[in-house]
Image (cartoon, rainbow, N blue to C red):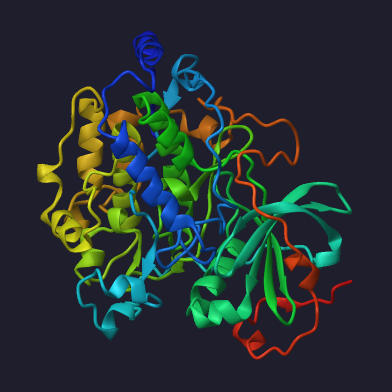
Length: 467
């Protein structure tokens, strides 16, 4: 751990007290903001596959467990880590995700990507990635749970809030129809999510407790994250004060660093995929695009506003695309919109702007401190070899940047820091942060024996009987 330095706590605390979510005029207010919300919600409707919690221009319930409602916002507190101690340094928005592996919708808007854009390139190196180790998991069957309500629906299936009959805890079960997953060419992404989550355990990453299948469906038992999406909080707030954006960015950085240490590229960072737990700390969700690689890959996937220039240019890329996306996320949290955002939905122009680089991106002083601007520019560097997080010192360049000077990384990772926003949770199993969906009888068909032509495509999902 690098040496610790004491921040000017009184100055930072005063800045926090003066900051508020309505302290700056903002371009997303009024009809413009409404248009963004309508477009963002339109991307969500009708999909539960792999967009940011799902894929293929789909952003709905998937691993995010549904679309939170705009319940009244609660005041954001000054993060306690900014006022209490010294710190160590550690060395629409149209937001559906896209992939070359399954998108007729995408092909009409993007440049012509040939078949090679779906190729995985693995280059030998002296120090290959660590071998992923699967964690011990429970053996579950559907009869172990009582379905409480639907948290989200989509083209692949739905997510249910359930309660265990054994320990009485609440979980989210994602149910994916195998025929639909195959039809939409999401077999690889579905298997990737299960395999990546099985090997990952971190306080800021959603936990997969178990998984199984019957003849018709796949089931994943996951954390129930009751606070909803960071995206919803950001849209209600327009933008975050600097200390609040710093809190969430720091937790995301810790999650990314953990994944990269396992040789995993996340590839779909955006506010919709960052969930808020009951204690206000984050859980990164949706691992449908995550990939374990030794060095580089060529697959086109992600969310247009968050794509790194090398991804758009069909070049080999590595974990640096996640650090690039962190720069976009920090910008969006501080300003309210991504840096290259366009009101009109023109992906070709958007990609031209991204590939031109951040030199023409505006940084209003009211929203961006000098340190914030400097870090964002270094994360959004167009040349991956010069991008923060991907140089000689790796993630240490990010963790030791002056913008993060106040962060006690050890205490933050231990969740000993009070979050700036605590979701209003009435009690265990409170799903009021999520939209209400009609409760039909679809769950009554779960576990029924039907012809199964696709079970072999999901070899890690064990078959279980209904009871």
